[in-house]
Image 1 (cartoon, rainbow over the protein chains, first blue to last red):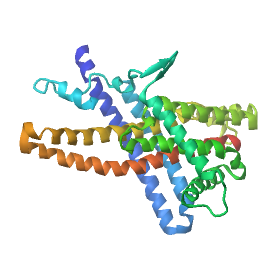
Image 2: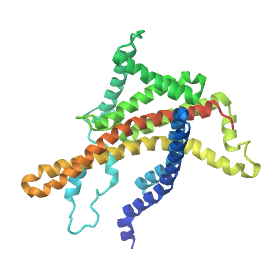
Image 3: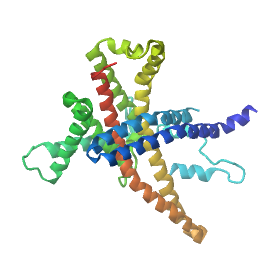
Image 4: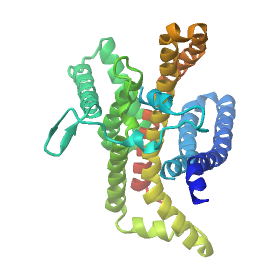
Length: 74
Length: 271
């Protein structure tokens, strides 16, 4: 039984990473979508909005990145 | 080509999953070309020095004269400096952001050149896809923003992170724990892993797609018309190749931007 789990460890880690990527995926979608709405409404603010959008993406990504690290550790 | 060789070694008839035996192979050191004491010179080390030399040469040649009417190359270098100074330094940190521009500019250009090695013919290896380099750069940023936090705010920097005054008292301990963890552990970790993961993923994709394309096309004498299956792989690889240019520039920008944001949050510590 232990041997079987040992064999499947890589696959389980992959599933874990996939689950970890769901939330940030949705979050980045919301961030970028709202940033596009803001840019379309106020094109003169596009530069500021773009910087803030990248920041939002970077912070939202953090959970997916932790999942990525755990995939390698597992 | 290592991945391709590993895949051909596995027994297709009996094994369900064909994967390298241990993913840690990706992170092992290769045999150095030569060593001086403890310093082992591999191809990656040479590429790091090459990237540093390219950045120094670009800045020296582009900005040495400081002419009133720059030629084309000088104009490009000046716009790169202006982009980091105004777009990242002063926009994010504020009017006194000019003090940190030398660091941010060096960071941006070095990571940019290192990332673009991924798609440079005959090099084809982004130095930032070795964890050591993003980790080191992230530690430098970590030391800078922690030092600035203590220098500008004294020990209030640490105490106000653990015990934030602007939060209702019942939640302070919880927010404090989260803030402490996210500021001093997650920030440097995600900063390094973001760059590393993006470049590693891009490099692996290019290797697998272009590599399988080349191997299929080289196998035409053996398997005949079936080798045509390599053409879509190769085409997809070329598509990803263009996409990786965008990723390389964007990741260099995001690393610089986040470094600036972390410095800003230490200089203007308002919690």
